[in-house]
Image (cartoon, rainbow, N blue to C red):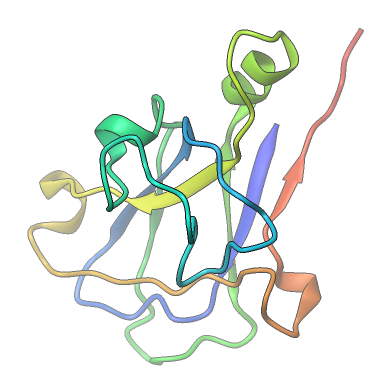
Length: 140
């Protein structure tokens, strides 16, 4: 299972390590937006999202690399995260499926201490072909 996402603004002085985390907290899809992912819902860790309390073990990371020549990359760059273990847990009934959070994770070996950033396309953007996609391949 692969989560594909698109970054249009990977500008920074360094790389950003990104992982997908399975959410432990139920949230309402009707009220969620990219700015307020769980509006009206209390996270397990309190009012603010906490990786420790509100998410499970992360996927293997990918590194989002900066484009030093441009503040806005067009077309956006595609990155992929392997989320096979998370999908297996959902399908096997050993973990609830409340979605995924794609989160930058500080790692001095990757970003060398620089403040990095990336901007990812979400479902609210008009360019639908760049919406994040989960691809699952079932094998017998």
